[in-house]
Length: 483
Image 1: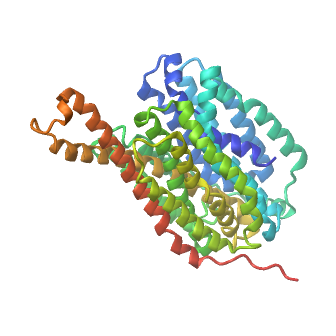
Image 2: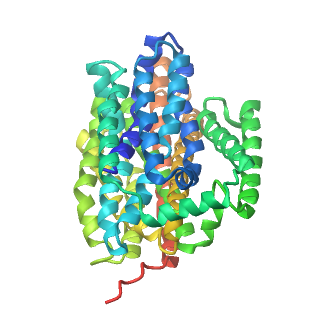
Image 3: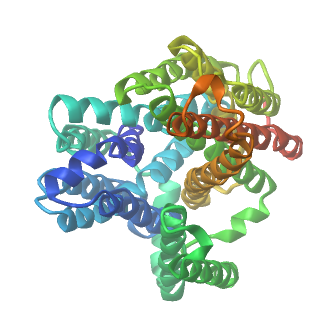
């Protein structure tokens, strides 16, 4: 019930990716302009997400959650009926603002509603939204667009939003501790952190645009990109200094003094980085180099999603009960990294079954990472700060995902140029293969350079997953229940 709206929101972060061409054609926009449909959502989402914990404390967590559901659902309908690109982008901005608070609010509700020993099973269900939704988004989006039209990728949010709003309004109650904390906060007088709000919007907004447009605008060769980098670096540094000493910060960076929370955020950044990067790489490689359609490549990802879903209950059952949460996380990170390192040995002759098994191997460990880390991250966090902790935790995951996508896109381009130059050096008029002409060799050269660059990127992100696991040794286990 609580996870329904967050699933819808996380799904929408990737569902529009495969429909951009159809959206651009329908609204008379260029392909480059249409990418703002994705960027606008991510920017507004990244602005509201870090302050969602503060908003939940001020407005009341349940009220904030319901407002977010209404905003997200209503703006989804506006997206579906948009008649111009400008209207669609504006609706996507509102949709991102509504969706940004859903995952943190839901996660803090789950953390507060169940005792420590039950959290693993609870987060197993919530993990469905974080792990499965991004992978299934392109599949669902492609099917809806091909079968009906691109408008339906937004219209499907209407019934889900109505159901989520009704269930939360009827069955979820605000804990007495949070009600008292909000009353005390308002009684003391709300000191609105205007500078903090401004720096959050400026810093995270420009960071998201920087990551989304870095490769498209030729990286640091672009004055626009350099300007964005200067703005987000300076504003985010000032934000940390300002919020650290503010009595009522919109982003409570002091939570990073809690060792478990800080370590779990670091691991979640890497997991978000690796997971979404691999989610983008595999279907992209399948479509551009192996000749797969969007639907077929999506099916390869979907099989990995099914494997993940089937293991969620197992991970929730054994975490902390039969196997140490820290041990599970360490083994799962090494397994995921090992699977990605194996993908660095892909062959251009690989079959659909090879691709599907590779994806299953990549994501089969995700439940054994996400569920323990979700439980361990709250060890030492005061209950009244669980909303702010959830907001920071989800923001770190969001930034990791965005950095991961931007990084692999840029690295892919650089390595493609590198391999193309190295391969071209070996081709001379005296070494044409089997009598092929230069015009026939050129596409083969490009294909081989592209494939080699994908293998390089798989190797790099696999190493990232493997090398991060030692920090898990510094995590403190959850306190054992007395008696």
